[in-house]
Image (tube, rainbow, N blue to C red):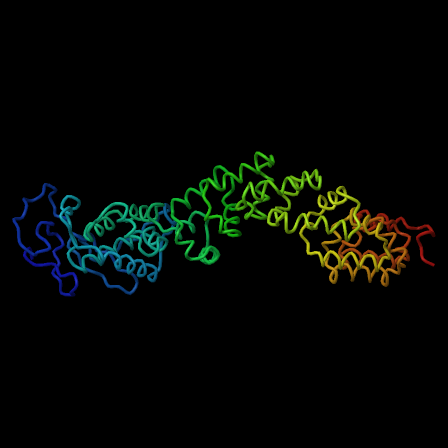
Length: 487
């Protein structure tokens, strides 16, 4: 056997399991055997007999005394925490590992310094790999998680190793190799993102689609690792907050820590945001961290503070960070001019009140605002001054849907509740928020209960709809005087 040439590609290859490396040279030439080792009993190259995976056959070995002995997979909570796996998973891991090992040379000159054993044919490799996989669920998980090119990436880090040495390392220390194969320096950036952010495969695909394949290919593992460390430690995001933020805006992975830290300092130091306020802001609109401090963030804050005179500029920034998405020149400043000309406002203080109470008015489409303003003026017979008073008091009315909220509510109050237009106008002027309450969940049920008890809504307090259910029931039970009873 010593003089045989290893035939890795044929099924009739000669197998020399206990042969020292010096006897299995690539050229097939024989050499003088070394003296017997002091270890006493000679070890077999492939170890004990183990059952192969599901569908496999048992192989006889030299060393074990009991041919029927089976090795039970070990429970290992270090990687994956699995205690068993099915034949499909084992076979898949085996095929993936064997495919990569085939690209390596059988041996090299350094092998004799690394290992006293050698696998010189496919049979020896197959038995060693399957035995290692059977005994180490973490190794199976590592191969599944690591993805294609796992062994190649390992060799890029540690240098060239032969197939024989790799098989020996995997066979002797499968759990240790599992840890090495899924370490940050070896695993792919896809595997790193899945592990660090606890992403599903579908979520990872969504991230790559959003970023774009070309941009994603330019990412490197060290940049991802640095970015995740920064958000977790310097920004103090929880794992779930970080995960949600990246899923909502994957483009943040393309920015450097230096770039992002300038935006974080602006919000925390210049705007004096608390951790809770800052997290709320980036959870709502994480893209705010992508905007330039000098060209977008600081000018927008100065617009709120100086141009419209809002005292709630910080509240607007963290509660409605969408405002940073809109251009000062194309949206925000023109909208203020539009308010003055079309809603008959009386100066900067009116705009400040409207923007502070309901910031989305600064970026709502103009035609939407006009349609609701015209509807209120027509249905309630409001003058320009009266419309201005309603909007300054409750600008949220401009955010209501005309067809789904305003029109159905006004129609019901005029027809179902029996109010005249004058009475409805008085109600709305006293409390414009009346139009914002749910028609089906609050307005209609309360008015129907009042009608069942003979209580006229027209004589009810103007703020009757803002009362809690408990307060409303107390008021309704107290109605015993004739002023609130219908004829």
